[in-house]
Amino acid sequence: MEFQTWEPVYEALLAAFGYPRAGDERARDRLGELVTDTATYDPADLALDGQIVAIAGAGPSLEREADRAAGADAVLAASTAVDRLHDEGVTVDAMVTDLDKNPETGRELTESGTPVAVHAHGDNVPAVEAQLPAYDLAFVVPTTQAAPTARVHNFGGFTDGDRAAFLADHFGAAELRFIGWDFDDPAVAPEKREKLRWAERLLYWLERRRGERFDVLDGRREAIRPVPGTE
Image (cartoon, rainbow, N blue to C red):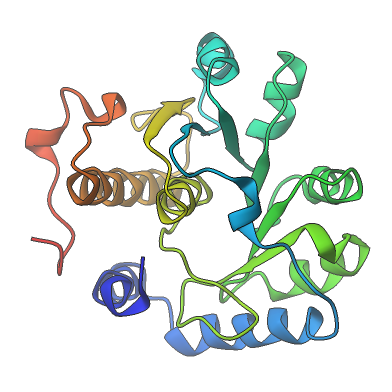
């Protein structure tokens, strides 16, 4: 995903949620400062090209579907999905997080040589500043949803889960397999519910770009509004 392709979608997200672009850019730049003097992880080293990649969300169906992750070539997991898959005996190949729930898991993964995509956005700079110094930066992939820089990447995506899917797509995954995705989870707060709606819209865009049909969208496509700029 090149930024010029992502940018219209990003602008639609900013407008929908009322996020200031300058906040994301400040967060991106602070993340870049924190990794300036250290080599970070190149996600091309995940060797996802041509692979079946499971994209694990943290919805209530995750444990029920964990065996589908075990059968994939690689597993990219969002936030707390990492811990829950571990409890099911499934090891992840990378974590995608904005550090809002289980930053200690990210730290432990980097210390053991498992990469973590750490995302900076307008309202998580304190978490980035507090947590990132404890991570092994050799296994950190710094990411932003604003324009990328020499040190901070943007592969596309908005929530932890769909960012994992866009990352896998960017690095050549042949098939994306979604587990633990529950767009209609009644337990989530209203803002999270709206973020899930956007994640659904972004996955709909991604499957059309890939010429693939994600089973997580089966029975839902007809009601999905395309994201502006992706029609």
